[in-house]
Image (cartoon, rainbow, N blue to C red; front, top):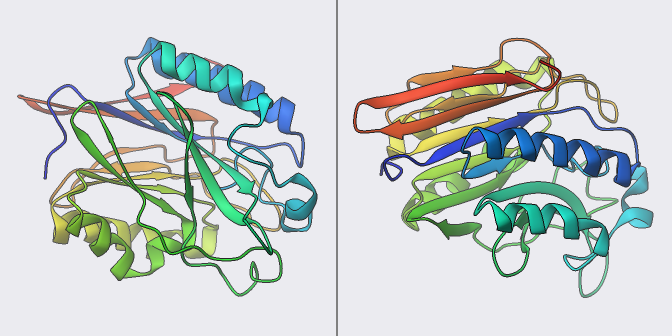
Length: 252
C-alpha cells in the first residue's frame, strides 16, 4: 500500500557515543530539528541509538518510556506532529531487558521491542512477540529492529496488518549489508510497501557499518541512499507526481 500523499519519512544515519545517553540525545534532538525543518513526519534512528550498541551496558542502562531524559525529544516531536523512533534498552516486567525502541510524539511514547534476538544478544536481552505497528496522519508504520528484518515472516506480518512502510532500525555491518539490503528490497517488491533502513554511520560495539541508510518504494525501486558514512538524514516523500528524496548532512 502507498503512503498518504505528502507524507515524508526519514532515516537518521547516526553515530553514538558509548553509553553517553545525554550526549546521544543531544544529537537526536539536532537531527530531529533538521527533520522538522524539512517537513519530516516519521524519523527513524538506528538500533539502540540512545546508548550505542553496547551489549555489556544493557543491564545498567535499561530504562522505561517515562524516563525524564526523553521528555525534550518527546515534547519536540509532539509540537511538530512528528513521530521519532529511537532505540534504547527497555525494562521488562521480569528478567532481562528488551532491545527496545520508543516512538516519541503524540500523547505518550510508544514502545516496540525486538522480536528476533541474535544468539550474541541472548545473554543480555530477551525477545518480545508483539506486532510493531503505529498509525500517524493516515499512514500505517510497521516497525522492525535489526535482526527482525532477517526473518521474512516479520515483514509479512507487518504487511498483513496493513503497513504502508516497513521501517528497520538497525546496525548492519559491512559484511552483512549487501545481503540485508537485498532482503529489504525484496520486501518492498513482494508486499508493495515502502521500506526504510536507518543504519549507523560509524562503529558501535564491535560492528563497523558501511552507512548505506536507504529507502525503497513499493515495488522495490531504491529511491534514496546515503552511499557513504556521513551522519545525515535521508528523506523521501510520496506525492501525486511520484517520489522525491533528499539527503541532509548533519554538519552541512
